[in-house]
Image (cartoon, rainbow, N blue to C red; front, top):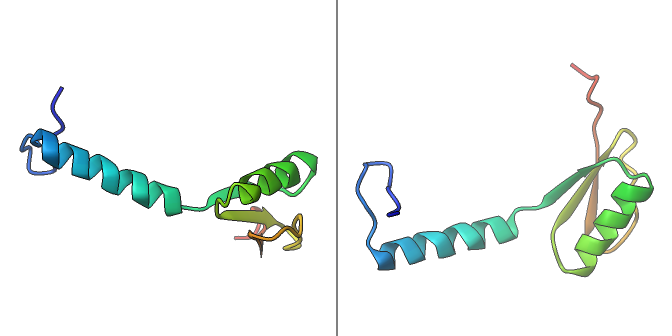
Length: 80
């Protein structure tokens, strides 16, 4: 099945390969956002950070697992 761009034009094989590569590069730089720093969230953040993946941990207080490569952010879902 050919890939179709926004102008409804079919990609050539070479263009499709470039599009997939660009998508993969963009997604590899996107951070993983983990909501909650309990046992599961903290463990997952450490595992991802150990694999050099960008990680953001969101908690009410802004505290997190305190690992290198993990950014902590304060947020509350009940705030308007």
